[in-house]
Length: 478
Figure 1 (cartoon, rainbow, N blue to C red):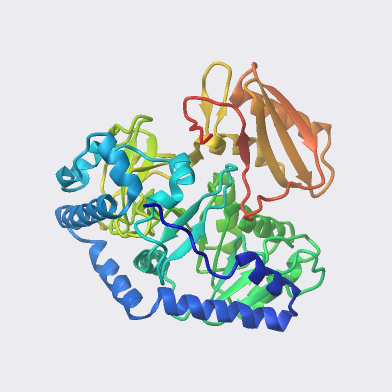
Figure 2: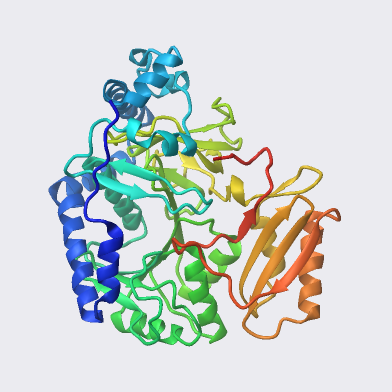
């Protein structure tokens, strides 16, 4: 049978009430929501999970593999027994799930992708949604948002692995953190401070990512200083806007740690953020599908996989494993989600497994920074694929640029959008075109347009490179 979806009170109704409420009531509503999250995802089970993760990060590799094998057997057998989708697809593929005894056997199973989830969402569920399940959504930065269901254990483990990376950065229980993410915590038409709301339950200050103009940013800085915040977390592009503002003022804002995620952290962004906030950046990787989580340790050399959270393969387009050190598509399998198991879920993220152990002594495998999504690669007419990180260098001397974005609309043309803080003249334009042409070659036309603003995605995320050109490194979700 296919299970009908029954959701809670519509989110848009709750958001409508929140938007119409005065500041003090918004704080009350935010904390009431935080209290519900606290009951659902924290408590004794969460504390036990955090303690186990502090131990397992240094387990011998064979012990980690034994744990993963046990979880794979459970998730695969559960999916086959309870999910109409997996039973049908694996039967059609002639796969006997009983032969999947661990991670070494995952290659027997077919890949799934975004299109699979979108088409078969209800059929993939293992029962009708139950109490304690959570329905989450991807942001859809590639234009293809998804609806995914998690059980309570998955929610707890997500918070536990997130807590572990905070511990690696020196953050203690009780420390406050400022968040610059995609939630609309302040009405978009608000024109006066405060542009933030405080979550006292989880000790978070949610700053609006949608009011960050030079007019309003002094209020942000005063609030951060006044509260004595020592940790910040946000999208790289959002924190970069704050860092650039401080740099223009000749100011620093020392922190103990800054966490970035959800977008590619470009070298130019890391350099500026670490300089202005006088602390290391801990970039981490995760996504709404909850099949993989990876975090930087204090060595900042690749990202340690949360091996207890999901099992990660790196494969070619057909699902065959590539050698450690070679680049491929990240394929993840959740080790906990029995609500909507995702088994061999192929993402659009490209990375490689680092073959050597980390000098920090943790035994968790590492992946190279997920520096490219397939949709964010510029491809040239002669077939070269150019990482966004390479394209940051021409922008470094252009200190008067507030925002920029590269859009490839044809294989032989890119358009560069520039939002300047001060005059952007012909000399600057010529510099940009010259330096980009050195990297892209003479067959790519480069157009530079000065625009009043470059809006973020609806999620609050910001894509610096957008490619509309199909190529071998890009997956189609149509």
